[in-house]
Length: 279
Image (cartoon, rainbow, N blue to C red; front, side, top):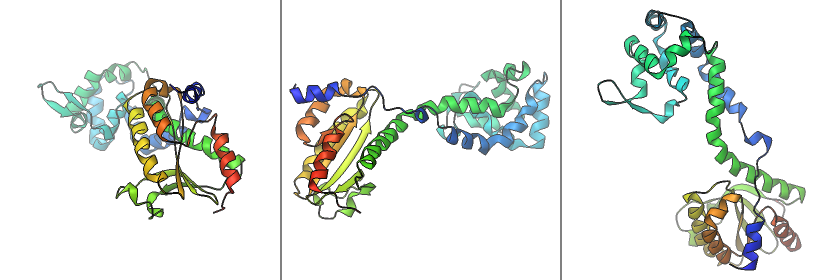
């Protein structure tokens, strides 16, 4: 392991999370608002001892109200969840929502019946808001990447570096080495010397994705760097890389312009010397 790579590895940050990373309340409110009318109608079931009768009454009034029963057990409709029914068949969860009999079966067997009868919740809109907060934790991985992009943007903005974001490689038709596949670069910066095509990411945890990313960029970098007017830059960070440090080290030896949040200032100093071209 080279000394330079050891230093790079030691500089990887513990987190790039800002307070808005943890929960996206705007998205949560939007998700709840879309089904709030149906949830308010389902509130009719809360406190009812005779749920069979209450379900029949509500079904006769508006059968579509039961379409949102899946979120009450923290399952999103687009997941198309499946389950064994009492006949030993594998069925989609939402097949329970079409008749009063199967709705009652669903409510009883999921445990929602006791939640309703005992008034463990008093308002299903508030209850689903809480569920959405819990489910939103699954989106934190994506927000980690977004936070990295924001952090890099902040570095560039503070240095008055002109850049473009989310730029397709089709904008550079002279780079024919990338083939027919369309690639979108997170940032593009032009100097009087060359154009820098920049990718950014951040990994808190491990997984196969890290190896795939390192392998992909190790392949892309030489294809771009063979053109004297272009250079591929990879800005990455996060403790997750310790679980894939062999692949990261391999990429480090292949990609000349590789930085983390601790060394990005070196890249900025370099391009400032070359003279930034304003867009």
